[in-house]
Length: 313
Image 1: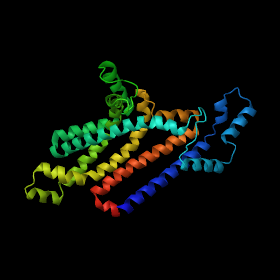
Image 2: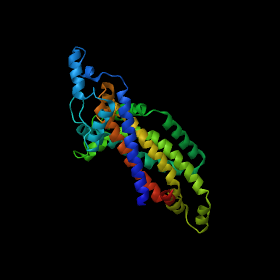
Image 3: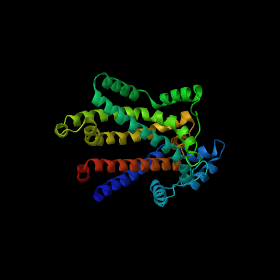
Image 4: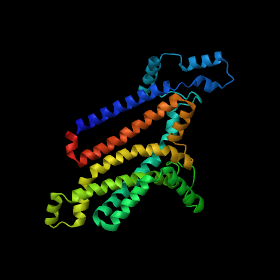
Protein backbone atom coordinates (compact mmCIF):
# COMPACT_ATOMS: atom_id res chain seq x y z
CA UNK A 1 0.00 0.00 0.00
CA UNK A 2 2.86 2.39 0.81
CA UNK A 3 4.45 1.76 -2.58
CA UNK A 4 1.08 2.40 -4.20
CA UNK A 5 0.76 5.75 -2.38
CA UNK A 6 4.35 6.74 -3.15
CA UNK A 7 3.85 6.13 -6.87
CA UNK A 8 0.67 8.21 -6.90
CA UNK A 9 2.24 11.08 -4.93
CA UNK A 10 5.36 11.09 -7.13
CA UNK A 11 3.21 11.15 -10.27
CA UNK A 12 1.20 14.03 -8.81
CA UNK A 13 4.32 16.08 -8.04
CA UNK A 14 5.63 15.53 -11.57
CA UNK A 15 2.27 16.61 -12.99
CA UNK A 16 2.27 19.83 -10.95
CA UNK A 17 5.80 20.69 -12.09
CA UNK A 18 5.04 19.95 -15.75
CA UNK A 19 1.83 21.99 -15.76
CA UNK A 20 3.48 24.91 -13.93
CA UNK A 21 6.41 24.89 -16.38
CA UNK A 22 4.13 24.72 -19.41
CA UNK A 23 2.01 27.58 -18.05
CA UNK A 24 5.09 29.71 -17.41
CA UNK A 25 6.36 29.13 -20.95
CA UNK A 26 2.98 29.85 -22.53
CA UNK A 27 2.60 33.09 -20.59
CA UNK A 28 6.01 34.23 -21.82
CA UNK A 29 4.92 33.69 -25.44
CA UNK A 30 1.79 35.84 -25.35
CA UNK A 31 3.65 38.95 -26.48
CA UNK A 32 1.75 41.12 -23.98
CA UNK A 33 3.55 44.26 -22.85
CA UNK A 34 2.79 43.90 -19.17
CA UNK A 35 4.74 46.96 -18.10
CA UNK A 36 2.80 49.10 -20.58
CA UNK A 37 -0.51 47.61 -19.36
CA UNK A 38 0.37 48.43 -15.77
CA UNK A 39 1.50 52.01 -16.39
CA UNK A 40 -1.02 52.88 -19.09
CA UNK A 41 -0.70 54.37 -22.54
CA UNK A 42 0.54 57.72 -21.25
CA UNK A 43 3.74 56.28 -19.75
CA UNK A 44 7.00 57.12 -21.47
CA UNK A 45 9.30 54.43 -22.94
CA UNK A 46 11.77 55.09 -20.12
CA UNK A 47 9.09 54.47 -17.49
CA UNK A 48 7.97 51.29 -19.25
CA UNK A 49 11.57 50.08 -19.42
CA UNK A 50 12.10 50.83 -15.73
CA UNK A 51 8.91 48.96 -14.81
CA UNK A 52 9.93 45.95 -16.90
CA UNK A 53 13.30 45.94 -15.12
CA UNK A 54 11.56 46.17 -11.73
CA UNK A 55 9.43 43.12 -12.58
CA UNK A 56 12.43 41.23 -13.96
CA UNK A 57 10.90 41.02 -17.43
CA UNK A 58 14.20 42.02 -19.04
CA UNK A 59 15.94 38.92 -17.68
CA UNK A 60 16.32 35.72 -19.74
CA UNK A 61 13.39 33.34 -19.56
CA UNK A 62 15.43 30.61 -17.85
CA UNK A 63 16.56 33.02 -15.13
CA UNK A 64 13.01 34.24 -14.51
CA UNK A 65 11.74 30.68 -14.31
CA UNK A 66 14.52 29.76 -11.89
CA UNK A 67 13.61 32.66 -9.60
CA UNK A 68 9.92 31.78 -9.69
CA UNK A 69 10.40 28.06 -9.05
CA UNK A 70 12.81 28.81 -6.16
CA UNK A 71 10.20 31.01 -4.46
CA UNK A 72 7.38 28.58 -5.22
CA UNK A 73 9.25 25.66 -3.66
CA UNK A 74 9.54 27.73 -0.48
CA UNK A 75 5.82 28.50 -0.52
CA UNK A 76 5.99 32.01 -1.95
CA UNK A 77 3.97 32.44 -5.14
CA UNK A 78 4.91 36.11 -5.49
CA UNK A 79 2.83 39.25 -5.73
CA UNK A 80 0.34 40.58 -8.24
CA UNK A 81 1.98 42.82 -10.83
CA UNK A 82 -1.07 45.06 -10.91
CA UNK A 83 -2.23 45.33 -7.30
CA UNK A 84 0.83 44.29 -5.33
CA UNK A 85 -1.28 41.88 -3.28
CA UNK A 86 0.26 38.62 -2.14
CA UNK A 87 -0.75 35.75 -4.41
CA UNK A 88 -0.78 33.43 -1.39
CA UNK A 89 -3.26 35.68 0.41
CA UNK A 90 -5.44 36.10 -2.68
CA UNK A 91 -5.62 32.34 -3.07
CA UNK A 92 -6.34 31.89 0.64
CA UNK A 93 -9.31 34.25 0.25
CA UNK A 94 -10.73 32.72 -2.92
CA UNK A 95 -9.88 29.00 -2.81
CA UNK A 96 -12.31 28.12 0.04
CA UNK A 97 -15.19 29.58 -1.99
CA UNK A 98 -14.45 27.49 -5.07
CA UNK A 99 -13.73 24.36 -3.03
CA UNK A 100 -17.02 24.82 -1.19
CA UNK A 101 -19.16 24.74 -4.32
CA UNK A 102 -17.06 22.07 -6.05
CA UNK A 103 -16.90 19.64 -3.12
CA UNK A 104 -20.57 20.10 -2.28
CA UNK A 105 -21.31 19.56 -5.98
CA UNK A 106 -19.24 16.37 -5.96
CA UNK A 107 -21.06 15.11 -2.88
CA UNK A 108 -24.43 15.78 -4.52
CA UNK A 109 -23.25 14.07 -7.71
CA UNK A 110 -21.97 11.05 -5.78
CA UNK A 111 -25.19 10.49 -3.84
CA UNK A 112 -27.53 11.09 -6.77
CA UNK A 113 -25.48 9.08 -9.28
CA UNK A 114 -25.38 6.02 -7.02
CA UNK A 115 -29.12 6.28 -6.37
CA UNK A 116 -30.11 6.86 -10.00
CA UNK A 117 -27.66 4.33 -11.43
CA UNK A 118 -28.75 1.66 -8.98
CA UNK A 119 -32.46 2.25 -9.61
CA UNK A 120 -31.94 2.17 -13.38
CA UNK A 121 -29.93 -1.07 -13.20
CA UNK A 122 -32.35 -2.86 -10.87
CA UNK A 123 -35.71 -1.69 -12.21
CA UNK A 124 -34.99 -1.57 -15.95
CA UNK A 125 -37.91 -0.87 -18.29
CA UNK A 126 -39.36 2.63 -18.37
CA UNK A 127 -37.47 3.64 -15.21
CA UNK A 128 -34.18 2.85 -16.92
CA UNK A 129 -35.22 4.77 -20.04
CA UNK A 130 -36.23 7.82 -18.01
CA UNK A 131 -32.92 7.83 -16.15
CA UNK A 132 -30.97 7.49 -19.40
CA UNK A 133 -32.94 10.32 -21.00
CA UNK A 134 -32.39 12.54 -17.95
CA UNK A 135 -28.66 11.73 -18.05
CA UNK A 136 -28.40 12.72 -21.72
CA UNK A 137 -30.31 15.93 -20.99
CA UNK A 138 -28.14 16.72 -17.98
CA UNK A 139 -24.98 16.24 -20.01
CA UNK A 140 -26.22 18.37 -22.91
CA UNK A 141 -27.36 21.42 -20.91
CA UNK A 142 -24.42 23.72 -20.02
CA UNK A 143 -23.86 24.46 -16.34
CA UNK A 144 -24.14 28.23 -16.79
CA UNK A 145 -27.69 27.85 -18.19
CA UNK A 146 -28.67 25.66 -15.25
CA UNK A 147 -27.13 28.26 -12.94
CA UNK A 148 -29.16 31.05 -14.54
CA UNK A 149 -32.42 29.08 -14.25
CA UNK A 150 -31.73 28.23 -10.61
CA UNK A 151 -30.87 31.84 -9.80
CA UNK A 152 -34.03 33.18 -11.44
CA UNK A 153 -36.44 30.56 -10.11
CA UNK A 154 -35.09 29.69 -6.66
CA UNK A 155 -33.58 33.04 -5.69
CA UNK A 156 -35.43 35.79 -7.57
CA UNK A 157 -38.94 34.39 -7.98
CA UNK A 158 -39.35 32.05 -5.01
CA UNK A 159 -36.83 33.86 -2.75
CA UNK A 160 -35.84 30.58 -1.11
CA UNK A 161 -32.08 31.09 -1.37
CA UNK A 162 -29.74 34.05 -1.94
CA UNK A 163 -28.91 34.84 -5.56
CA UNK A 164 -25.43 36.23 -4.95
CA UNK A 165 -22.79 36.45 -2.26
CA UNK A 166 -20.86 34.04 -0.06
CA UNK A 167 -20.98 33.40 3.67
CA UNK A 168 -17.88 31.79 5.19
CA UNK A 169 -18.35 28.45 6.93
CA UNK A 170 -16.83 29.85 10.12
CA UNK A 171 -19.35 32.68 10.18
CA UNK A 172 -22.54 30.64 9.81
CA UNK A 173 -22.98 27.02 8.79
CA UNK A 174 -26.54 27.56 7.58
CA UNK A 175 -25.58 30.77 5.79
CA UNK A 176 -22.65 28.99 4.13
CA UNK A 177 -24.88 26.16 2.95
CA UNK A 178 -27.49 28.56 1.59
CA UNK A 179 -24.83 30.50 -0.34
CA UNK A 180 -23.24 27.43 -1.98
CA UNK A 181 -26.15 25.08 -2.61
CA UNK A 182 -27.41 26.65 -5.86
CA UNK A 183 -23.99 26.90 -7.57
CA UNK A 184 -23.14 23.41 -6.31
CA UNK A 185 -26.33 21.98 -7.82
CA UNK A 186 -25.61 23.77 -11.11
CA UNK A 187 -22.18 22.12 -11.21
CA UNK A 188 -23.44 18.72 -10.07
CA UNK A 189 -25.98 18.12 -12.86
CA UNK A 190 -23.52 17.11 -15.59
CA UNK A 191 -21.34 15.14 -13.15
CA UNK A 192 -24.39 13.28 -11.86
CA UNK A 193 -25.49 12.39 -15.38
CA UNK A 194 -22.13 10.96 -16.45
CA UNK A 195 -21.45 9.09 -13.20
CA UNK A 196 -24.99 7.67 -12.96
CA UNK A 197 -24.63 6.08 -16.39
CA UNK A 198 -21.30 4.57 -15.35
CA UNK A 199 -22.82 3.18 -12.14
CA UNK A 200 -25.75 1.77 -14.12
CA UNK A 201 -23.55 0.03 -16.71
CA UNK A 202 -21.07 -1.34 -14.17
CA UNK A 203 -23.82 -2.59 -11.86
CA UNK A 204 -25.63 -4.37 -14.69
CA UNK A 205 -22.39 -6.16 -15.60
CA UNK A 206 -21.69 -7.12 -11.98
CA UNK A 207 -25.22 -8.43 -11.42
CA UNK A 208 -24.66 -10.84 -14.35
CA UNK A 209 -21.43 -12.19 -12.82
CA UNK A 210 -21.12 -15.75 -11.55
CA UNK A 211 -20.41 -14.76 -7.93
CA UNK A 212 -23.71 -12.84 -7.76
CA UNK A 213 -25.63 -15.91 -8.92
CA UNK A 214 -23.76 -17.91 -6.28
CA UNK A 215 -24.71 -15.44 -3.55
CA UNK A 216 -28.34 -15.54 -4.59
CA UNK A 217 -28.33 -19.32 -4.67
CA UNK A 218 -27.20 -19.28 -1.04
CA UNK A 219 -30.34 -17.42 -0.05
CA UNK A 220 -29.06 -13.85 0.26
CA UNK A 221 -31.76 -11.27 -0.41
CA UNK A 222 -31.46 -8.73 -3.21
CA UNK A 223 -30.69 -5.81 -0.87
CA UNK A 224 -27.74 -7.62 0.66
CA UNK A 225 -26.39 -8.77 -2.71
CA UNK A 226 -26.64 -5.30 -4.25
CA UNK A 227 -25.50 -3.06 -1.40
CA UNK A 228 -22.90 -5.31 0.26
CA UNK A 229 -21.35 -7.00 -2.77
CA UNK A 230 -22.41 -5.76 -6.22
CA UNK A 231 -22.07 -2.01 -5.61
CA UNK A 232 -18.58 -2.43 -4.18
CA UNK A 233 -17.46 -4.24 -7.32
CA UNK A 234 -19.19 -1.67 -9.54
CA UNK A 235 -17.73 1.33 -7.69
CA UNK A 236 -14.19 1.52 -9.18
CA UNK A 237 -15.27 2.51 -12.73
CA UNK A 238 -17.66 5.08 -11.26
CA UNK A 239 -14.86 6.54 -9.12
CA UNK A 240 -12.72 6.93 -12.23
CA UNK A 241 -15.47 8.90 -13.95
CA UNK A 242 -16.06 10.97 -10.81
CA UNK A 243 -12.36 11.85 -10.66
CA UNK A 244 -12.52 13.10 -14.23
CA UNK A 245 -15.70 15.01 -13.43
CA UNK A 246 -13.92 16.85 -10.61
CA UNK A 247 -11.66 18.50 -13.18
CA UNK A 248 -14.75 19.54 -15.13
CA UNK A 249 -16.31 20.97 -11.97
CA UNK A 250 -13.25 23.13 -11.36
CA UNK A 251 -13.49 24.44 -14.92
CA UNK A 252 -17.24 24.98 -14.72
CA UNK A 253 -16.83 26.93 -11.48
CA UNK A 254 -15.37 29.86 -13.45
CA UNK A 255 -18.71 30.56 -15.16
CA UNK A 256 -20.95 29.56 -12.26
CA UNK A 257 -19.09 31.91 -9.91
CA UNK A 258 -19.82 34.76 -12.31
CA UNK A 259 -23.55 33.96 -12.33
CA UNK A 260 -23.84 33.90 -8.54
CA UNK A 261 -21.36 36.71 -7.85
CA UNK A 262 -18.91 34.48 -5.96
CA UNK A 263 -15.32 35.81 -5.69
CA UNK A 264 -13.75 32.39 -6.08
CA UNK A 265 -10.52 31.19 -7.63
CA UNK A 266 -12.15 30.97 -11.06
CA UNK A 267 -12.97 34.67 -10.97
CA UNK A 268 -9.45 35.43 -9.77
CA UNK A 269 -7.89 33.41 -12.61
CA UNK A 270 -10.17 34.99 -15.20
CA UNK A 271 -9.29 38.54 -14.17
CA UNK A 272 -5.58 37.67 -14.03
CA UNK A 273 -5.71 36.18 -17.54
CA UNK A 274 -7.44 39.28 -18.94
CA UNK A 275 -4.83 41.61 -17.44
CA UNK A 276 -1.83 39.38 -18.08
CA UNK A 277 -1.03 39.12 -14.36
CA UNK A 278 1.36 36.17 -14.62
CA UNK A 279 2.14 35.63 -10.88
CA UNK A 280 -1.57 35.40 -10.00
CA UNK A 281 -2.34 33.17 -12.98
CA UNK A 282 0.59 30.87 -12.23
CA UNK A 283 -0.45 30.67 -8.59
CA UNK A 284 -4.02 29.73 -9.46
CA UNK A 285 -2.84 27.08 -11.91
CA UNK A 286 -0.42 25.52 -9.41
CA UNK A 287 -2.94 25.48 -6.57
CA UNK A 288 -5.75 24.19 -8.79
CA UNK A 289 -3.62 21.36 -10.16
CA UNK A 290 -2.45 20.52 -6.63
CA UNK A 291 -6.06 20.31 -5.43
CA UNK A 292 -6.98 18.11 -8.41
CA UNK A 293 -4.01 15.83 -7.68
CA UNK A 294 -4.96 15.62 -3.98
CA UNK A 295 -8.59 14.73 -4.74
CA UNK A 296 -7.54 12.16 -7.32
CA UNK A 297 -5.11 10.69 -4.79
CA UNK A 298 -7.97 10.25 -2.32
CA UNK A 299 -10.06 8.60 -5.02
CA UNK A 300 -7.12 6.36 -5.93
CA UNK A 301 -6.87 5.30 -2.29
CA UNK A 302 -10.58 4.48 -2.31
CA UNK A 303 -10.12 2.67 -5.63
CA UNK A 304 -7.25 0.65 -4.17
CA UNK A 305 -9.30 -0.23 -1.11
CA UNK A 306 -12.21 -1.40 -3.26
CA UNK A 307 -10.01 -3.23 -5.78
CA UNK A 308 -6.76 -4.63 -4.27
CA UNK A 309 -5.48 -5.51 -7.75
CA UNK A 310 -4.88 -1.79 -8.36
CA UNK A 311 -2.29 -1.63 -5.58
CA UNK A 312 -0.05 -4.08 -7.38
CA UNK A 313 -0.69 -2.95 -10.96
